[in-house]
Image (cartoon, rainbow, N blue to C red; front, top):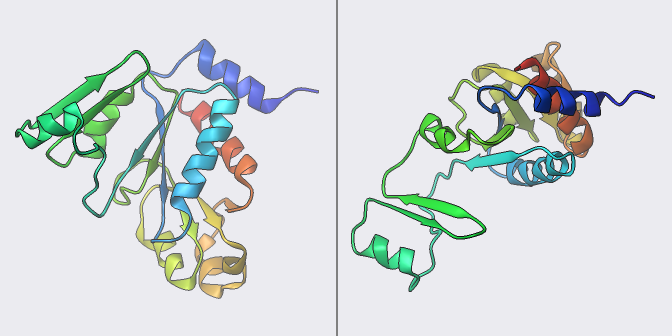
Length: 188
């Protein structure tokens, strides 16, 4: 039996895209964005894709530990600090970056999963858990599919706004990953 996911993998790797396929995972707070991005990353990595992730954080965050060399560089006033080892690299910048600026560093991957950045114009998976979340289905652009919590299925505001949009259960990350791969294949 033919495996459609294997075919998509072969298609992507035989003719790699000029840039990675970018898909956003958006929703209000506590709708499961981070959990979904992590699960999708695991599933795509199991299928041998190179996956990048980007997160928009509404709060100031700390990535570097006090006392490390890069922390000391930042404390000394460096506007941007980069570090590289035999296993990984990181860049710390003391200015906000647009999604486009962050994506420049991800040209070596196949798929980028973006958590947040609601107003950007990449295809979006919108997480819907409560009635208030349904408003995103009509207020955001470039919605590719909805990811619904079980309790959202019974909300009239959700069902009326789906209007033919593909919808997946938040508990079915395998199906969501397959959907992302089908969309990435169209990106070629």
